[in-house]
Length: 380
Ligand code: GLY
Image (cartoon, rainbow, N blue to C red; front, side, top):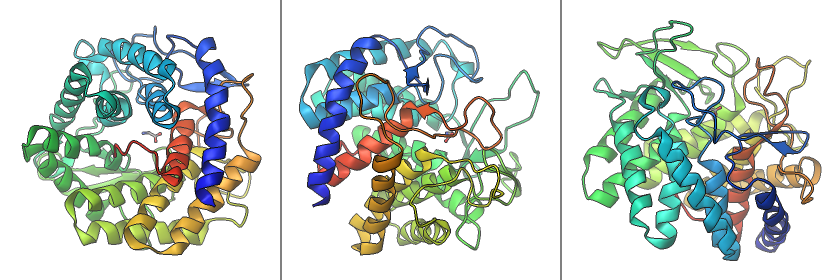
């Protein structure tokens, strides 16, 4: 039943995307305003400010191409994906200062997925280089440093680690298997362990930014980051936590990672509203009501994974509730517009990235549907 429904949605998306690609050939979209994608391909910046070639979401357009190829086998997807990979070579390695811990987000859906499709060696190399860059961000006190210092603000971020990295570490697990070299997976597991102990609160909610003493590894404090405030529960962060710890369980077999994913999932379910739509932060004030469809799409993937590992129906039901709500109220399958999902929010306090379209929201929506259809390229 869910499978038929998902296949039906994917057919609509396949039809839409063939036109959307024609309109955006050679572009690397990140956001959509009023149904029109932007293009990050020709924006070179030397550090990861709000835009540029090294922007953390720039692998998701190619990622959509790979996943949709797995669904329909349309060659146009692979052509477009190749362009994306070649464009992102501009970040490797000439823009070192522009890169960050998000090399997993950038090259897993892109090069690693492509390598899984056709064994392309250039794609494999890109994935391994991206994993090595991430490995280089490891602080031996047990965490991956998120960002380089921002020359514009001068803030010292040596000790900063963020929940989002729980997804990036999947490229480390992959590299270990690929190279038959435990170093990468050992770092991934250590980072997951440190994150589990410091970023996940007693009640199952998750901090966005955790700061450690870079010399000793002592936990110092949290920052609200993209959420409403310190102590709040940024929903995309909760989603990264559910999905990320479920994935780490899958790669390591560690039951405490699975239990952590379930703990965050329980907090998430207890704070969800009946309509299945997800706010930007579960602890945000009533007004203004800011929604984030990316959190719903990513969490759906995480809940489907949890269902797979535990067989608990409530997880599948929760994923279906969110996906059906997105489909009914927040999606646009018309070929006349570029993005699918609406009401995506980058950060609670952001002004330019509130309730718009995001390429990665569409990516995770598609990935969730493909999981239901049994056709996803499993990259995380
Ligand atoms: N990785 C940043 C975010 O989720 O917005």
